[in-house]
Image 1 (cartoon, helix red, strand yellow):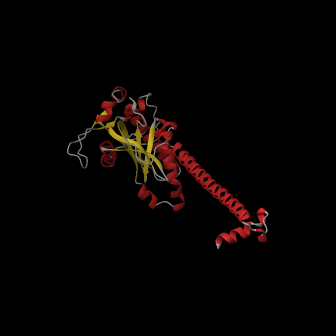
Image 2 (image 1 turned 180 degrees about the vertical axis):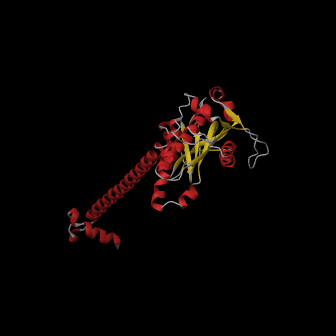
Image 3 (image 1 turned 45 degrees about the vertical axis):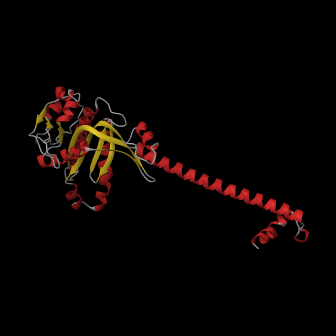
Length: 302
């Protein structure tokens, strides 16, 4: 029945009267109808594919644009071209964790409209010194950040770059804190922990996100060193493995050894060092600009 209705509808369009049906005309009409149906089906498939391709291209461009804000072009290409299955590989890298101190209490005492601008400003100020020293932002965790130095390919100076990046982060937050105090706002403090060692690193992607991450014991140790900065009242702590991987840091700067510390989940103590801030300031090679009047962790004014 449906076929006859279709034939009656299409007959005027193909020039065949209703009373003129014969076996030949019926066959011809069916052939023409089949061609019309095939063409319509093919066009529908082409439109659907074009729409999917356009949507995929727009999504890919959007994801690449977001990645390019934090990653180098080489790393953006590697992440974007990665398949759905993770492609992790073992390598050495320096891991940096930084955390803003007292943000929860700060948010409680500041109007909501002012707090809303704070995270973006914080991310911008902390991302710039990290990327400037060849670090890759892995993720933001509330008011904290994890960064990797040595991806997509490890370099001989990854540990040194991580320390320089950490010093620059402390300097940037000190500068921001001085600006805030000058405007009658509460000061800010940051804690930075750096560790160097073996990780498993690679790109992760799904339909909505693209990212590059690292996992392993080195990451866990770096995170716990950062937490130790709050316990010891320090702005920057690094492990002995960092110094061993960047011996020129000991040549250019003075590092103060702290007593070995047992970190949560580890049976062996970790040797920890803090920088001698006076040496940091007097070293032109480090290029760390401390703001006038800013307070260092040793309590002295710059």
